[in-house]
Image (tube, rainbow, N blue to C red; front, top):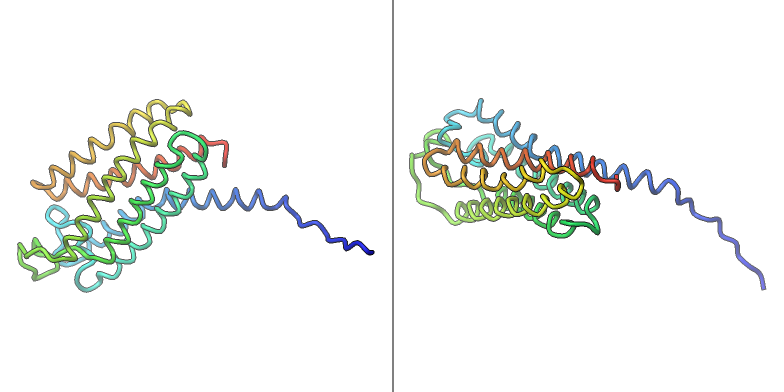
Length: 222
């Protein structure tokens, strides 16, 4: 009877590789909000007929050149999904380790839904569109996706306040509990001003980016 010797597989390089992958996921999650806003605001400056005081960023997916905003929705959703995976690794086994990443993931999926079901035209955009239009089926789905996504985001802020507090980041935890109030207040004010809606959405995106990066820095898992 002969024994077959097999050379052991190297395992040491796996740890640095995994650590690098987690860092890339954190970077992706942190970049999602700023990238989405830069792309949207940049288009708003050059698209004919777009008025940030009257038109939502999501309407940029309409008309000529609308594919840019559609790609932005898809890319942002992918980056948020990566960020959700990063939070899952950072928070694994601790407070917020299950629902925090899940809720951020739902927020990311809402961007994919927004890409698949574009907003309705209106308020003069795209150029030549009437001020008011009859809501369509895809427009209704687009709005529902946004509502579900941002409610999930607000819930995520509340869930993630606990791991922030556990890590001694009390001012971050307090702000994370206050942020849903500010975001929802902006959404309620959107009936009077689309700019309030845009500001609230931007605030939520930027705070999520900051939270993702801060929790990663405070975690010993990275």
